[in-house]
Image (cartoon, rainbow, N blue to C red; front, side, top):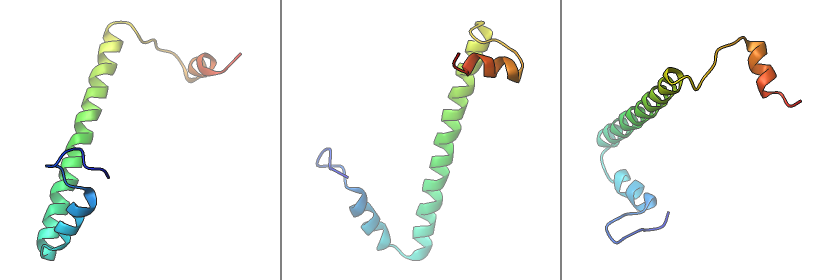
Length: 76
């Protein structure tokens, strides 16, 4: 991973620094990062749902059976 500016550390250096912490603090860091990733995924999903609802409410989507869907996506 390249440095983008002098204030940004590389991933390797960050991992080396974390390895210097006691195990319980490393586990705490892991838990915090894991929860942040979950929250970011939750935000992405919420945005996707919002966009889908907007498309549905604007009439940009249509309903149909699985066969209708397959007919729409299969090449002729």
